[in-house]
Image (cartoon, rainbow, N blue to C red; front, side, top):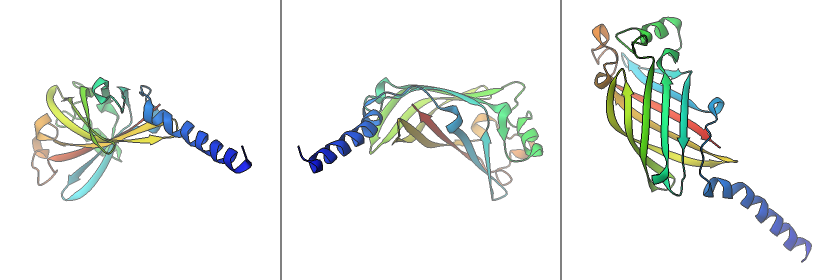
Length: 187
C-alpha cells in the first residue's frame, strides 16, 4: 500500500471514529454544565428572556430507536432568572410560580418518535403548579464530538398553568404564550 492510499485510509478511520459514536449509540448522560432551559415571554410588546439556573434531566435517547427512549426533566422554579432581583422575586410569588407550594416543574415522556432529518417528537406530561397537561415537543438531534445535542422549543399558555394571575392575567400586559427552549448535551 502506497503513502497516498495509507493517508486516505487513516483519514477514513479518523472520520469514522468521530462519526460512528454519534450515529450508532444510545446516550444517557446529560452534561449539566453545557445544557440549559430558557424561556421567552412578552411584556407590553417587549421580548423578555429568562432562564432556570437549576434543573436535573435524566434522558435515555437512542436516535436509531427513539421508541425505546425516555426523559424526565425537573426544573427548580425557585431558580427562575429574568435578569433582575425584582423580576425574580415577582416570578416566585403566588400569582406566578408559587415556589413555596410548587418548587419544581416537571416534564416526563416515554413516547418518542422520529419525524425525519434528525427531527423527533416527544409526547409527554408537563406539570407546572400541580396542573398536568399532555404536550407534544418537537426537537432536533445534532451529532457532536462524542455525543449528541438535543434542542427544541415548547410553546405553552400561561393561563393553562395558572402562571401570572391577578393583575398579571391580562394578556395585553404579559402575553399568554411563553416559549420554553431547551438544549441538552448528551454523552
